[in-house]
Length: 309
Image (cartoon, rainbow, N blue to C red; front, side):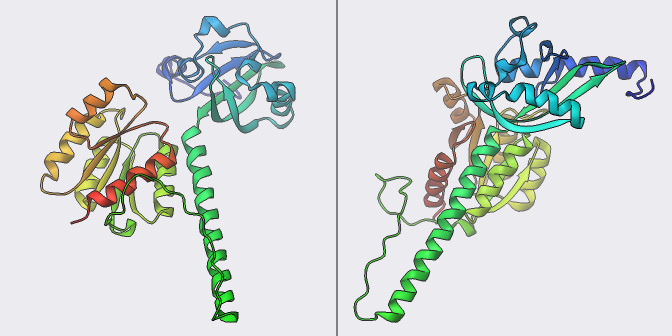
């Protein structure tokens, strides 16, 4: 099979199975004009359309209106042909009208001329939210440093009459009274999520906030890591492959029965029944994904108070 992927009969079977069952990535097949001719399970899950609703329609339905008006779908295919690949990070549109931030590539498929395109997309909204929040936090730190420098400069020149310098402070929990809290640098957090981008992004934000952070991407690794680092707080994805979050939580509780460890469930489901189930499973809190950075910070503030003593 010159110029293509060599396969055994089993390889061909697995390739077809992957196309049908892969759910983490949207795989969309297009004809040379951009009309959708293939739509895998990941695309259906990510964008909300069943295959019968999109086959035969132009792939521009995935783009937000501003990008369609700007001619972005056509530009993407032209770039793929001219450069051999078009990579892009942009907002895409679901069937229900909601948006998600996507990272993807489009590549041309040739066989005696251009036969079509394959577009592969993954949802990186969590990473985008955390990146945005991390940049905001870094800007706050930079602004704080500038205020401090201004304060010191004024003090050195006007020691007897010092003007007040206001530094904006964002109250995470305005109604909560001041309370003693464990400093972030004394708190060890373990993030457990098979979504590598999501786990790493949350870990990055936590490190910026000053926490000691360890990451595991599946249940067994989390159990081994927890025995070693003895975390104070575990942010645990429920939908882990293999050993799910409920089983990992039960084993962590048994493994560290004498510790002050707090367990926080992370899941895409937030109904009262879902919250009741995580509570009954021994979780101390329930976060709905994608986790909003402000919600996470409020939780961390509460954790710091609960860990006192």
